[in-house]
Image 1 (cartoon, rainbow, N blue to C red):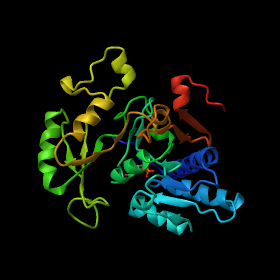
Image 2: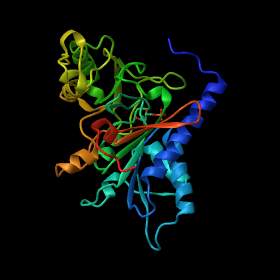
Image 3: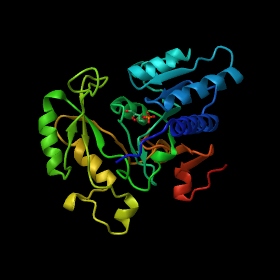
Image 4: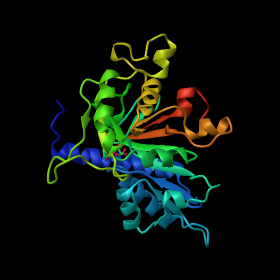
Amino acid sequence: MAATLVPNDLEKIEAAKRKAAFQAVEDHFRSDMHFVGIGSGSTIVYGVEAIKIHLEKNPPPRGHMNWFVPTGWNSRKVIEQAGLLPIAFDSVPRDAMIEVCFDGADEVDEELNCIKGGGACLFQEKLVACRSKKFVCIADYRKAQRRLLTTWPSIPIEVAPIAQASVIRELKTLGSPLPMLREHTLSKTGPIQTDQSFYIIDAPFKTLLTSADVAIGKDGSGKDGVWDVDTLAARIKRINGVLEVGLFHGKNGEEVARVGGHGGQKPVAVYFGTADGSVFVRDYKQLEGVESGK
Ligand SMILES: O=C[C@H](O)[C@H](O)[C@H](O)COP(=O)(O)O
């Protein structure tokens, strides 16, 4: 059972998120950027605050516009309330890339695979991440784990309402013991609806293997319900009625660019704020052993 958080813990967590957000923005945002993606959730609010302060201190070149691409209703509100300019994803010029997107996560493993969708946003977040040169993730220390599904219990999956029962059925055959349709708990009854008016199924699985685990011979093919992140994400995505799966995996935007492509699902770096006020960074270049130039 999750430990009960007392007010002091909550303050530390909020302070940790804010500190991580300010460092992530300091390292990855520039006032001369044209298009910047803004994710959803409680952490990204601090990212937007940090961007606003950065722009006040470092105004963009005369006549330059900074456009912020939301990943849903809530994200758009946060952008507008900060006095920044939102631009809908489908209004970004066809040939333009989003220079960077900032977003949170529910859990991150040591290869920077992420679980997202705890707040019912994942489809638009993945669209924006995959249209961005780089995705920079902001989180707090509770989210840093070695493997996914360590403390976060399940994978959020966005599904067409009509298909929810058949998706649940198929998830069980993949080894998910109790996939559940996410429902409102307080004022409203019935399933939670996403920005696409779809439903969310939360599917628990055994702790997921990384590609490093597979490289040393561990079997992530789903035998006995044991999956590696890439195989499970691809398998769930193939289920009829699934719009998107809340596993952000594969390559990041910079890795994709190196082979001539555009955008990737995984963050290039994750900034974790800690309870003692420091920030630690998991950067893919460190994972690869590539010199980060910092
Ligand atoms: O559905 C919501 C998004 O994927 C969020 O980025 C994720 O749940 C993290 O949210 P928070 O910053 O509130 O922990």
